[in-house]
Image 1 (cartoon, rainbow, N blue to C red):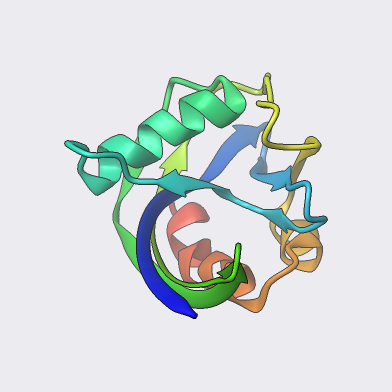
Image 2 (image 1 turned 120 degrees about the horizontal axis):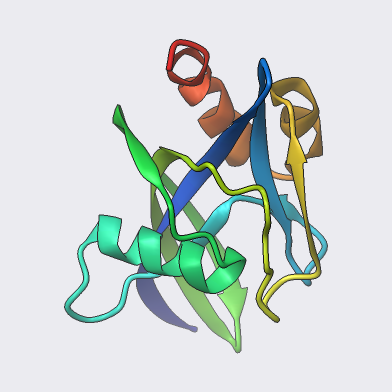
Length: 140
């Protein structure tokens, strides 16, 4: 089987509603719940790709990045008889938008408080990212 390396970027996006902090999760067609992410296109840096993907997948354009958070995850999967070795760089961002217009790449979305978001995320690497950003979110 052919092996391919891919690099993507994404954002763990949250907003404030009263004294609550709500995290955005997207429901992917394969059934899992995860953060906004997508492939880095030619000529983009990681942050530009994360912003573009957020705009395309959610319609959200107002994002303020939280300093001090940039995490990479790695995983491998098989697609079209190819082994895909994936690296995804995640940033942490706050938005003031509550309205989400999901793309046709997703089934649904939900805004959840930390504990519920932690439970709802499907993969352990997403749960780990949430844990890593928790202290920054609750001090911002």
